[in-house]
Amino acid sequence: MFSLFEDSPEFKKRLATPFTPTKVTLQEVHSVIPKHLHEKNTFKALLYVIRDVTCAVIVYKLGWLIDPIAKFLVEECGTPHVGIAVKWGLWALYWHWQGVILAGWWCMAHEAGHGSLSNYPWFNHLVGYSLHTPQFILVPYYAWRSSHHAHHKATMSIERDENFVPRTRSEYGLPPENIAKVNDYHEMFEETPIYTLLRMLFMQVLGWQYYLFTNAMGNQMYPPWTNHFQPSSPLFKPHERKGIIASNIGLSAMSCILYLWTREVGFHNFLKFFFVPYLLANHWIVMLTYLHHSDPSIAHYRATQWSFLRGAISTVDRPLLGWAGRFFLHNVSHDHVAHHLFSSIPFYNQPYVTEAIKKILKEDYNYDSTASS
Image (cartoon, rainbow, N blue to C red; front, side, top):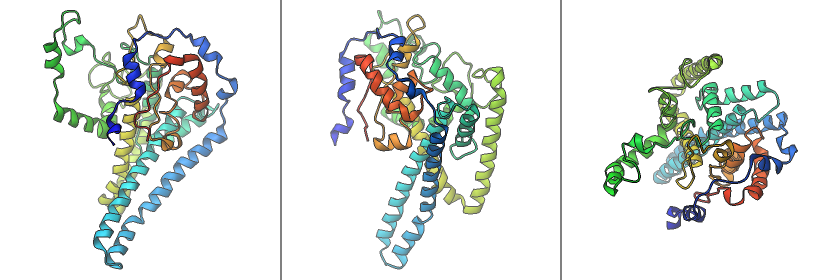
C-alpha cells in the first residue's frame, strides 16, 4: 500500500543522473518511423468516435437504473442499509466511468484538433467541434486548438510555451542563485499544507475552467485576464476570430440545452448525471496535462538553448489509468513523447512510434511508472 506514495524507479534514476541535452538529431528520429504509420483512416477514426459516444450513452442509460434498484432493495427486500450502500456505490461507479469516458471525448477532439483523424480537414473539425463544444464537456474547440498548437510549437520553452510555464527566480522575488541563502527559499516556499491542499483541490476540480477564463499557469507574456473566449484575445490571430465566435455560439447553445434538460429532469439529476462526471472529466484533463509537463526531473529551456526536438522529448510517458487510459484516453498519456514528436500521426499508431523512438532516444526517452492504474 505504501508503495503507492513512493517515487518511481525511473524518476529516482533521472534525479540521480546529471542532465545533458540530447545529442540525437531530429532527422535521426524521423528516420526510424515507418511511413505507413503516418497514414490516416477516416472510417477507422469514425468507428472510434462512435464507440466513445456509445459508451457514454450506455453508461447514461444504466445510470437511470441506479435509484430504482436501490428503491427495490429498500422497499421490496427490506434491506435499507444494503439499498443505501448499493445506491451510492453504483453512483460512484457511474461518476468515475462517465468522467473517464467524457475525458476520452476531450482526447478524441484533441486528436481531431491536430488533424490526425483524417486527411479531410472538414472531418477533423466536425469531430473536434462536435465533441468539444456543443457537447457535454463544454470546451471552446477553436480557441483551445489555437493555444494548443502554440504549445506544441514551443513545448518546454520558458519564453514561449503556453501551458504550465514555471515561474522564474525574478518572478518569485528571489535573489540570484550565487548569493541566495536557505532562508530566502524558506520564506517563499515554507510548508503550508492547508493552502497547498486547497490549491490542489481547486486545480483538479476547476483548474481547467480557470485556465480557459484567466490563462492561469499560462505564459506571462500575455496581459492579465487573457482568456479563451474573447475573439480579440492576444492568444489568437485575426484570421482565427471567426472560429472563436463559433466556439462561443456552440457553448451558449449547449448551455441552453442543459438548462432545458435540467428543468425537465430536476436539479438533483443534473448534479448526478452531468455535473459530477463533468467535474471528474476535467480532473482527468488537468491531471494528464499536468503530469506530462511538470515533472521536476525534466528540463525547461531558455530561448538560446531551446529546439523543437529538445522540447518535444522533454515530456514523460505514463501508463495513466492502465488499460482504461489506452482504451478511453486514446494513448494520450502512454505515448505522449511520440505525440509531441509526431502529432499528426493517428493515436492508434502512436504505440508503434513509441517503440521506434525508444531505440534511437535511449536514455533520452522519459517514462514514469507511477500511478500505472
